[in-house]
Length: 395
Image 1 (cartoon, rainbow, N blue to C red):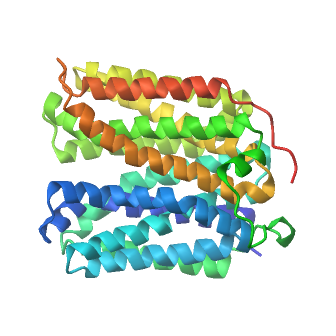
Image 2 (cartoon, one colour):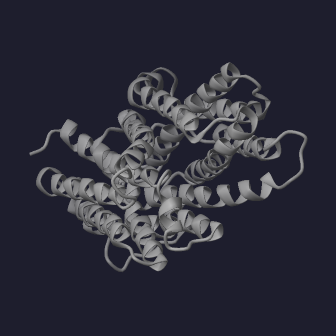
Image 3 (tube, rainbow, N blue to C red):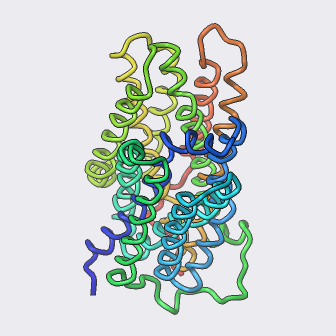
């Protein structure tokens, strides 16, 4: 039987591969889509359809994992990720790219199942630390994904997608041979059960779970506005190239990995999840307000450190709080709903960013960044109202 460390390691790898797949397209997909005559609007839709499909499918996969178990859902969804990347590599028409992104978006909804698996195999007091592993996987994937995409594309623009497909296939093999099921049969739901959002919330701690989900949505939306416009802002303000921005994103990613993969567990034990979530929202809001005021590289690096710290404190603790505020046999559905909120934020944020960029202001992108900061203030207010109770009522 696999040890707890092996189980968490495989889950870490699953999320890491998902993030590699999300980030690997950053330097490649626009150029690849142009091969098939895609316009700028179509390229934007091609990027956004991934998060839109995730928004729709994450609750479904979470509910399915509560019915049939975590392992089969993880296995099938990882194989779907491999198929999606293979289709993209083999594409000979624009519609095939959209099909591949839709398949990958559906499969990428397995993050909620990975979080539910973590909730199954960890105690409530250690849950945010384990959820921090997912944040670390996101950070590492965000660092390595664009680099892998740029490196592999030297041979052909399709090569990064074949590489990601092979990586997903290896991960599926590890799940099949090494990952045991984590959800006992007595905790599974019946096939006919199709709960509404209100039903899921009723099996948590009411406002506490709803407040966590709302805070997660607003924090992701504000962060997505920043990531959408950051490269344009630094090009306009500092004349940075794509390579310069790659280094900055790597810097943010490394800080995120250090925080979420190393420091978070000790900080949660010392200060609690609610305190760190509130501090993270405040730091992220302040950093977004300060971003358009950055006039030197040194100030920009300080602001980026604040962004990394704020996001590193906020995201995993919100996931941990959501898990602690719902019954054991509802973990998959609750985590699916959380990821659906995040996917909606990643879809709405870039759309809002594009519109706000056109709003006249004395400083480039200031209106958009200050709007993002205001959205994080809303997330901050919501974290203040979240209960810090140690766990949800028993199943």
